Image 1 (spheres, helix red, strand yellow):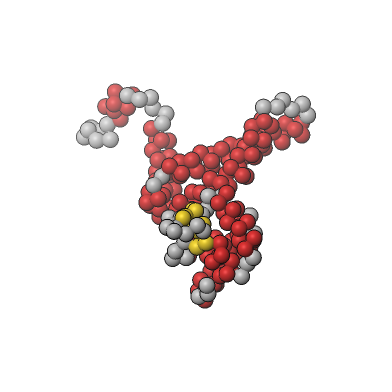
Image 2: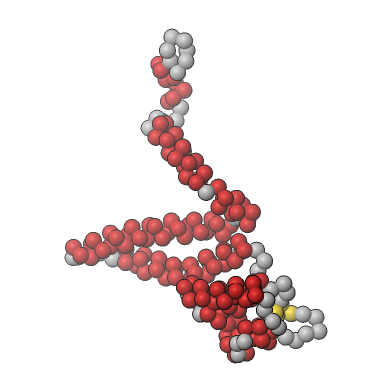
Length: 203
């Protein structure tokens, strides 16, 4: 199986980037090949295309399966196992976010919760705990947001991302409205509106 030039460039780049994302070069290249392939591939085809040993390919595929980044497929009248990357890039994003959370974020949140339950007795630890509290609040806010993202349909998530700075402008307007009316108890405005009108009955 020969890899055409454009595909080869993508596969090689993905392998180099893999180390920055916490996976090795071999796994990165395997995933890139499966992602752009027009059909599911078996381990022998992957090994031949990338010039990797069969054992390295098997280990790489197992790692990708543990991350839920590839699907195992069986072909009719074929005992070999075939692998395919999900078609929906938003599904890939959600899977990566969820898996990284389980491996990296959840253990940190657990440690921070335990630390915040302690009663420090020295000034240095009191200061450190306050900083930990800030970090815990930030991480928890982010994980709650990720939970909401996980529930969204791919089309909804795409529209949200496309909104860009429109979301910021909407929030700024919402904050200004809250500041203007937030101090006034519900119902009070309607009862006292006549005191703020001029002779022409206008605000």
